[in-house]
Image (cartoon, rainbow, N blue to C red; front, side, top):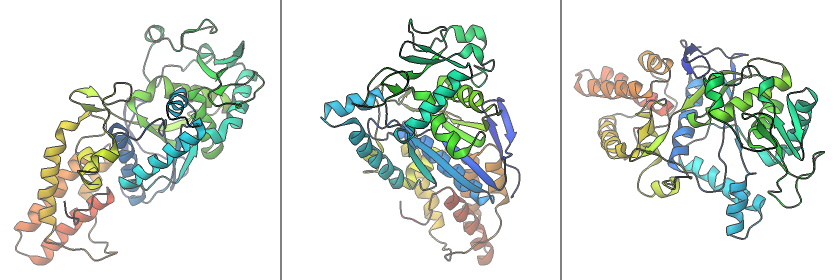
Length: 395
């Protein structure tokens, strides 16, 4: 492998050297969308980052298997489907297709497998039954809840004390024993005629859906779990509690990597706030390369705001103008990329890598040695292509 990659780990709260379980194999899971509507730019920022991370891991010599779930069972989907008089699963399938099309339009191509959670309900029921039999969950009427008091590490990922957690109750209900318990099975028919279980007809809880996807495919432990930072609590806390309680293997995930939020005029972009800008709308006026360049220009752990797109566009035009004087042959490897790799090995510091690429192209323009100029430019162009930004395309 080329150098040592270090990534900020949410669990430890510091940068950790990346150590996959079975190198060169790397298993990565990223929480996919709930497909009640089209992908917005907040989602795009997250998925572009993990696409770039997968590309870079491959550049380092790893064999990456990248799994993403698609949440196609949810009350928001059922409500959205009812508005257009469509069956929930048919609506979800249609919106899943638009999601995949939006990913392709952003040049996000590194996901190896997409899994709709509706295909894993039988596994969900098996896992819920196992948690009940092991004493980690309890039945309450037709509900099944995970008992967070039975999991001593609850709150560790989000770095919350028992006092902190007491102020953040989940799913208020008289059916629960404890404020932080969460539903594994709900007596709510989100899709007519589905699903039958020993607790009656109903639907799986949100958190258990992900565990039902990952454990059968990735096993009891995998290397990277990604998603937006807002999912840390309670969603990812719940995944840890479920997974480790089911298998007895710790940790469920070796590296927790989270992206920060995209804001619009200082407010988080979200469907609930109604301030979303869809990928489809934005790509009518700007390119996928520009969006990738814009998002990469801010470190993935920092908040980003759409007000910076104009400046990013002007900068990309300047950089492409410098690169346009040089051409690479197809398949040309060129010189090594040690500075680029040092930037990304330091917690995927893409902004610093872009700065290096820009400086390198300026040096290529200034040098009087043609071979040296070509060599410098080729490193910058190849490096940015690893991140999915083609400097030789027209802006």
